[in-house]
Image (cartoon, rainbow, N blue to C red; front, side, top):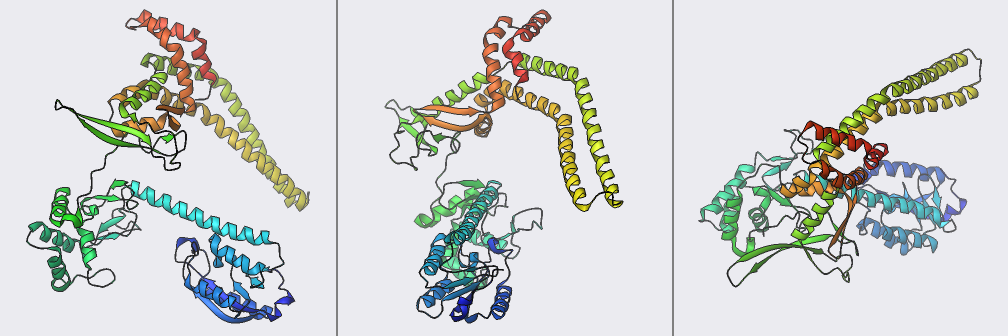
Length: 540
């Protein structure tokens, strides 16, 4: 801990202790522990504490009542020093951090003492900037991690917020590994509320009166149910098995929790409720949304369904894709592309990597034969590496014996042992690489050739989920500009594309490969083709 300056003798201190109930502060001392440690520090350093402020609230955003009161009192001159456990107890956001720094620079606060160091107006501001910057970045990273975790939970089918009445959150997966389970006390009662509404004989106010006064239902906070809560229950798709997350985002998920009612029953209740509970508009799922961005402004490409009625009575349905222009309203990419045309471009890309099954069979047989030829050399290398590794182990053992016999000093022992340990790790990595690399390479090659052989057919005939999976497997950085789709293919598929260019002409000469002679011709031609053979030296 830094030495506390004698200039602090006339300074009056506010002690500020804070701990949030959120995950950001799980490793921080409790408020009581912070207070005790800081009081002991003040006694030891002869610091005068005029008031203690305690607060249980996150500092990730401005608006802490106790903190704001402390700053107000400091400005009134009731104190001119702050005593806290760490700077991040004062602020985890740039606004509060700037307020503290400004007060210190203008000597409204003449000294901030943490458990490990002191900060004065004349100090280099960079140190405080770094500490507050780390605290703010931690808060931002935590926010992103929490959002990512909640989104993942939703995608897995579990509502990532407090379960509505009739259900309970089950974070410890005590029962059947489920995140949300039925509330044994309230599930049947809420179901009875739905049943009452479905009879058509009861209005929501009448049901509310029965629930509160006859059934004696109480909320988690032991209060009577409010009218808004009743309508929230009757209009929530969660009860038939779906939920939206985040709210008003348009992202709907199929829940894994046990539904309380059917979708048909839900829609019937919405009709009974009228304007206060309209059925949820049907949302369309599109094949390419959420995957493609605008090449000009970086906004996501979205889709919309249009219906055209002709005078002759025919009805045509079209799906169009276009830039949302959220990042740049002035984006020039205003023209939409039909899903059919976009799909053709994807098929063209898949066609460029397509290979016939005969080529895949030949390629895998060729790779396996080449692997067998190299096996003997590889085994010799492996044996040599194993001997080197064992020799390194023996050297370490000898070194330990030498130190035990006082043949070398402690310093010499540490230096030599450190080098040998590094060599040991290096040789172990070489062993693992030699032993696994070739088999993994062949597995990768098999996957690439299988994908290239069947992807186009599966895409043309597959359902929406299949199309999405194939498109995401193709590569990354999917961009749309001037109705043209571009994609950065995975490296192995770029190599397959090279194979395709050589195969397209030559393979047609051998079709149909019905006879043994033609298959032998194909094998002979394949072995002579420099484009195909060069591929074996590339990294799949």
